[in-house]
Length: 179
Length: 231
Image: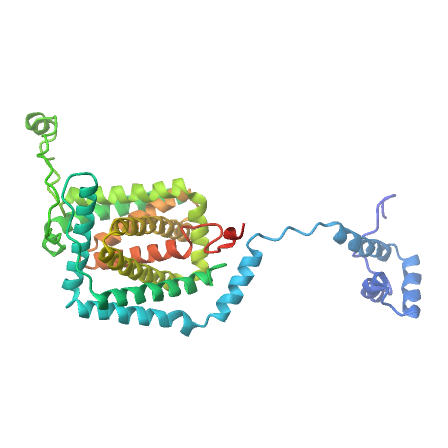
């Protein structure tokens, strides 16, 4: 016995309920042929449980419209662009600069007669920078101007260009980049 | 329960660090690289005065504790480790949002890309050093370049610690991010103290840290985008 004022249990099934409920959505959307729509309406007139289902189905579209769409994440557009860009940058393009960099580095090491020569170059640069700083604060005399080497300069310049290009490719995979 | 797991792990890592520092400073001290001989000394500092406490009082209070004793000694290892951990934590405290963003982007980039970026950045710094040093008038910039590189490594190391701490969180249970990062930094320190291999592993870690800092522009919100230049 149902209490007075309570809505019927929506899951209760009677004869013809399953067929009517399967067509409720189409009825609400107005997609049901006229004859079938009439049959469903006739069933609804005599079935409280299906009427409750119908009410819920009718209230769904306005409730969905009432929900405000969430604001898109600020990273959405940059993220999509980054993904597109990353797909455009193939693995060959991404990794081949590393080979060029290592070849150039090996060339520098070879030109300086091995790692010891490279260490001497770095040590000399550090010492000159220290001496320059000492000269700036009046603690030492100005160091001698280092002798330049055109080959080393050219390789270093090329290394700067290649590494910058490579870094910009790698950074482009993460978000809006320089490229 | 998770708290005790974290405390146990941190205690174990500290104990391991002490043990490794003792091994490195005694049995394996000769394996460590010695500083290169200085070609030219710009100036000689004046002799430093002795510390105010005399040997008598020191000997009375701390009979077994003397001077640190230079590079690669037991206390040198521990003081370097403690200093590095504190510096890395200071970065996380100073720029938490940048560190979080950098960690999130690292997950998108993948570790290989980060290491390769580190290698490229190091070679770039080396090439820029040669160019600036040869120009002579720009030689002051060499110190700036390597200072920036060191800063990038420090920032990247903090971010790697944060990421590793998050990874540990999944396995050990929740803990405050600063605590998890501390444990991760202790693990990095232990890794660096592993005899012989430690220097190579630490080098790889620092190269990756530099790559992470470079790729994310120190965790900047806009990355390497130059849209802000458009006004």
